[in-house]
Length: 306
Ligand SMILES: [Zn+2]
Image 1 (cartoon, rainbow, N blue to C red):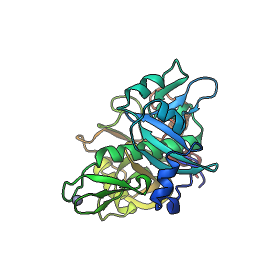
Image 2: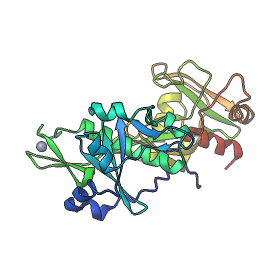
Image 3: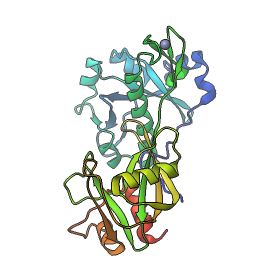
Image 4: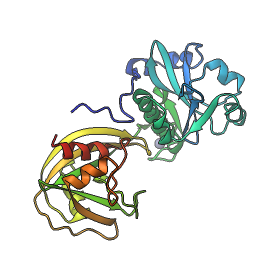
């Protein structure tokens, strides 16, 4: 299955070898050929105009704008080093990277509507990375201050010297089917609450749990349905803040729904025809997630029998 999900297809070479060379990173952070992607409050800088694209700036721009912040290395692309830099606290830069000057900051969800797939992959990496650095200034073991190593891939504790690595949180997302129908639900937490949008069931993989076990547990918790065989479909980075969505299909072993009122607003079986109409936007009583989400593609694959 070869689906290029939004937030995947990141073309950057993350450069494991270069990262380990502190001097190389320091030199590239000042190199005129290097490119820097500013983020403000986790929103991404884009060029405004006919050709919307990521708002890469140069080292000279950062200097002119008086930016005093550490860039983090994303990787290499087209022969130049690419970095992300958080300019939330840099007033001059924020005021000058404005609409008047051809820029704007866009949240990482809406930005995917104007970017190419590969650029959305860069956004996923950049947003997750800045968010992780913002939350990990202190060591989880001893409370000491941490500092950046390997261009941003590690934060090392200045006291106990433990190395902290960025987390990625696995989430299973599954379309369960009994053959002719599929099981979709509305989470109470989600943005779909109290609309006619239904989505695939999803939840975080617990510690010491396999993907198959997480699917079986989540479907039982959310819908009271037992599942049989679980099949992997595809995965999607989801930088809110740093999940990896693991898309699956599963066979239902039982059909009587008994959903958890605290967690779910509703869970139902839908026929293939109902879901097919919803995918075309022609079903008044059922909507399904947009193509930005892996759920859309899992549902589409089920309808087509893929
Ligand atoms: Zn420590």
